[in-house]
Image (cartoon, rainbow, N blue to C red; front, side, top):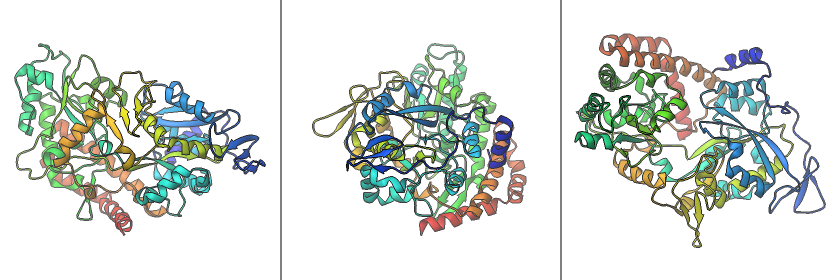
Length: 531
């Protein structure tokens, strides 16, 4: 949603969803000395600068998270343990990833909580809030966060990723320098139980894949294959669970996300203009025409996708996901290779830092206490527990300083999926031991399996490229129009065909939509970042 839509929503909705008690105000009174070198007073509350709890009496911070998590963060054992340790209660309001209008309204109205954890706001929203003075720069609070100070000093790449153009660090990010996480985006899974029933091997080519899918459909209702079997399932153009690895992994056309942008020899490549993209689109049309792809792939939201790939008994023949929901049924599959493809380019994750995961707004009455909470989350023990579960529930700390990541066996309330900050450095990641039965043990095996076909990092457009305000405004508008036109056209070709006859007109339309200017702005940003 663009900024004008956001403003219209403000008029239409008023304050219907605003957080109570979170009216915008000036930054709270500065902390004052207490006569004790180890504490200061913030709005009548003593904040300890070392040790725990952080505060001498409980305080509450109103918090927002945008998430696909289906449980209630307020019931999470992790947040309960964090409150017990710190004395700080997070009153968490969850916004679904499928209903981001609520987040857009929050920024448009400037009605902020005390703290925002993971929300993935747009760069425009963050920049606007920064310029308006609505965000407390974390740079001014680093002296209260020694764990973060140490990390930023020892890891220049992390510091560069978090630092804004004016030299300030406004918000902290989730540092995730763990190859089990970064090595691939999704595993491409196939139903081995169905393959075994039909006497088929795991497909190695796109022709074999199409044949296996056809057999899944032909045998629906027989044996382990249910009547409502979905041979091939995905969410169109989605970074998580999309069909994008078919483009790169099978046909050699790297498409990292819905922007269709990759980098070749330092040059921005808009793959939606690459004539080679016609081949995977024609292949998808063939699968759709044969009834091997359901029309819901273009319309299902995250909840529907989650329900289908996690269904028991299983109803999906092949799909992509970060974790394998049932290793007894599904196995990771190398991307089936199309004829004539010399180099397969499978996707990896590139977010060594996911920015704006811990943003303090200026109506927060306890910024120093909040900074200390951020520092606690960067402690190695708490980083491990945040990502993988509390000690005794999801993890175990060993006497030698290593951490066992235990098999998942609990409910959503017991395992964190916290969507906040953490500091998973390579040194800490090397201390993790994923035990059999943990989904990351299976994922670690998949990461190793995919390594020969994963695209090199320099082929991905960097996540941290910055633009001038003028260029950002232009790029936002151009991308919005171009992406929507590409999306609708590609879906049309998958459903109805006609790509060869209509390709030239499609390219001409993109040119008229100033696609070349869009590419030039991105190239300018890439060049500046690279220097």
